[in-house]
Image (cartoon, rainbow, N blue to C red):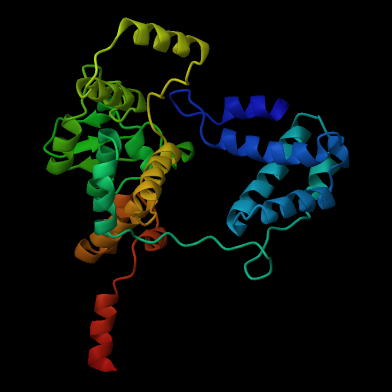
Length: 324
């Protein structure tokens, strides 16, 4: 698909890796191809788009996700018009399909992200790898995004001052030309030093190194000797059935999957890393105020911070007691 090649070139971070948008377009392309793979693009009209959208609804996706992915289909056609692959009418007709509106569709609503309590997080920590545990603890200490903590490198940290400054090379608003600076205090510094390597460009939290550490620990704890026949057989299995090599760094999705897997296995209430940001924002706002939470979260508008920081009901209750 021509657009997929365009997406791989266009949706790239500064280091050359693709953003999650590439995979998002692949998801919608597969759904469109499944229903209309043999249909000429110029014949894909509003009713076809609505039929694909209904598949999204039937799949149980939330309304916001459905609107986002339906919008991506429209943008594919907009790009195709610019490349003169389809006539302008092919895109213009699709713009007549409005997004699903709250309360006027059978699509479910997205559940608001709530803070996660410390007890739940603490119950998770003993069961995850050292690298996942480090990411969780760093998020708690810095209130950064999961993707920001997952891609941290020593090369991105200014350690010249008492409080280190981490400037991610890739973050949510980088494509808008905005910079992001995350202050790292003494406790977070001590945590990160345990993950420093000789190469400043290494990702501090790495699935590859986590796997190497896990295998080394298994070897140390092994009770039976390694017989030559076993080593030969295992070597042959690795050649005939090679496993995908672990990645050099985590992303928001793999981070969340690692937490979810542990929660399911050990009966811990499900939570995901984005909730740590909400928990931290709530704590910062309560102790230091809305402006402090806004600065720490890296938001340009205070109303965005309100989404993350739960309202401080303590003050409201106090006022109501006095005036009501």
